[in-house]
Amino acid sequence: MQVYTDVFRICGNKLLRSHKILAIFILLCVIIVLLLVIIVQLYQCDCNSTNIAEVLSSESLVKQRNHVLCLIIPFRDRFDELLVFLTHMKVFLDKQNVKHHVYVVNQVDSYRFNRGSLINVGFLYISTHSPQCDFIAMHDVDLIPLNPQLNYSYPGDSIMHIAAPHLHPKYHYKTFIGGILMMKNTHFKLVNGLSNKYWGWGLEDDELYVRIKEARIRIERPPENLGTGITDTFKHIHDKTRRRRDMTKCFNQKEVTRKRDRETGLHDVQYERISSYVMSVNGSNAVILNVGLKCNRTVTPWCLCRPVGVKPVPPVPRVGEPNT
Image (cartoon, rainbow, N blue to C red):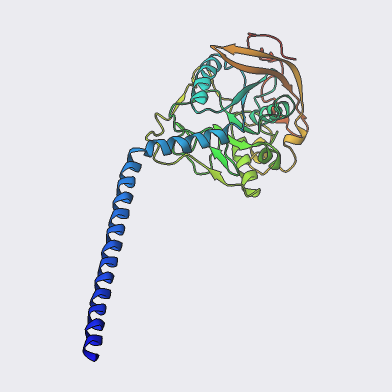
């Protein structure tokens, strides 16, 4: 009897071991099949990678649709440049799906050109007439972007300096933020816009740089690897012989304009709106604001550094319907 028991035990152990081997074999087969399925799907994923990129791009487009850009163009006696600018910018921004409106703030008084005050006036105007705009671009009319990688989309919590020192055709110093500068409206209000003391050409953007730094707002710029540089990122259509810059310094202008202005800005810009109308050029519309700035000659006597008898600059030639 003991012999039979031993025989059954031995046979049972062998059978149990054979079942274990079979189970292990089946498990290995399942693992191999799963690995093959994963490999095939990964291979197919490479073929569909463009679809994923398209989905990401469409999501970005949806986010951009929630924002509207207002371009503010400080302007005087640059009609030829304006025609080129308006035609080009519509095509350029439409390709980036950037909803935008253009406002040309034209200085028609007899004072020297004041870029900072004109931008302040433009911002006040769009605040009431284009409340849908939630970010602005302070844009020189003679600086035309050529590289399609220059991004005009909503800058978020940063300020975007598109005409960066490593790309601008003329100005390359580290703290330069002129030419084309974008920021959301809340940031413009936070720094109180630009100083109103800068009559004549230059330095108002350097003072704005100090305002931005004091407000601790980050300034971003396009990457270094755009594929273009200072000669081909922008087209600079400034004619030195026809458009001589007013760099005259008189009274104590040099001393005052080298300091941070804590007195003037968006909140106290003084001006009179003469007229406004819509101008259309090759399907591109712009609102033209003819404004007369006001100067306190006790505070900034350098608003007139030339004979008082100079005739006022005429408004932009009128094209389009009145927009009062």
